[in-house]
Length: 340
Image (cartoon, rainbow, N blue to C red; front, side, top):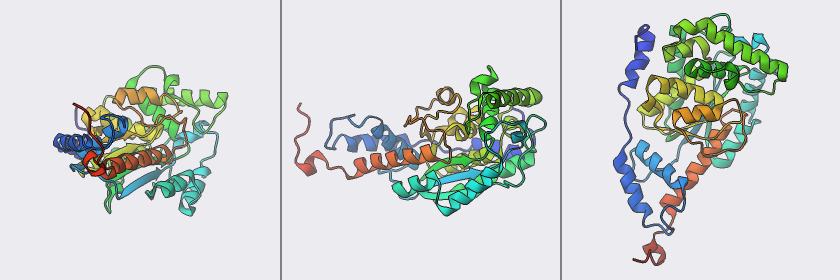
C-alpha cells in the first residue's frame, strides 16, 4: 500500500507494532471454568467473552473495574443535501443533553456503572460536503485520529465506543459503499427517520460522493479522509490506542463500525480485540459485521447510536466476568463433579 504522506505514515507504522492476543491466558480461563458449578459450555457465549477479555487484557483473571463509554460528536457538510430528518442544530442540543444527564446513554451507563466521556469535535465547523469535496485534508484527518487516541487517557480496562452527529449515517454508508462496492442503496438506511424522498436523497448523495472520489479510494485512509467524518476518524484512533494498551473494545452500531471497517481494510487483524456489541437496525449493518467476522452480542433493533448498544453489551460482559470470578467451584460448594 503506497504511503500518501507523513501523517498517514504514522498510522501505518502503528499497525506494524500491534500487540497480539495472549492465547495462554485462555488456557488458564478454561482450566478454571472446568471447576465451576455448572456444566461445561452451559453459559455459551458468556464463556467466550471471558476468554476474549483474558486474551486481550493478558490476565488469567480478567476483570472490568474501569469501563468507559466514549462518545464522539461531530457535524457533516453533507447535511446540505437533505439527507437527515433533523436539522444540524440537533447535534449541539444533544451534546448539551449528554452533559445534563438526559440522554439514553446516560441512563444505561448509570445502570451498569460505566464511566462516560463525551468528545466534541469542532461541531460548529462541519466537515466539507463529501458530494462536493474531500471531508478534510490528510493532516486534519490524522490529527483527528490522534485526538481519538486520547479516549483511553486516565486508564480503562474496557472501552465502549459511540457517536452522535446529524448526517453521519450517510457518511458511514459512503464509507461502506467505497470499501465494498455494490449498489449504493444497499448501504443506506433511514437514519434519523427520513421519508422516502429523503431516503432517495441519501442514496443519491452516497452514490455521487463515491463517484467523485473514486480515483482515490484504493487506500482505506483516503476513504476515511475523503468520505469520513471527524467522529469516525477519532473512533478509529480510539480503537487503535486501545489495541496498543491491550484494552478490549466494544463497538456500537452502524457508524462506529465504519471506523472499524477502515482499520480492517488496512489490516484485518487490527480489530481482533473488538467485540460487536449489537446488530443495528440501520442500513446493512449485518452485512458489514459479517465481512468483519464479528458476531453481535445483542439484536434489539436499536439504531440510536450514542454508544447505547455497546453499553448494554458491556453489562453482559461484566456479568460474564462476575460468573467466572465469583461462582463457586465444585470443591467449594461441595457439589459432586461430572461422573466419569
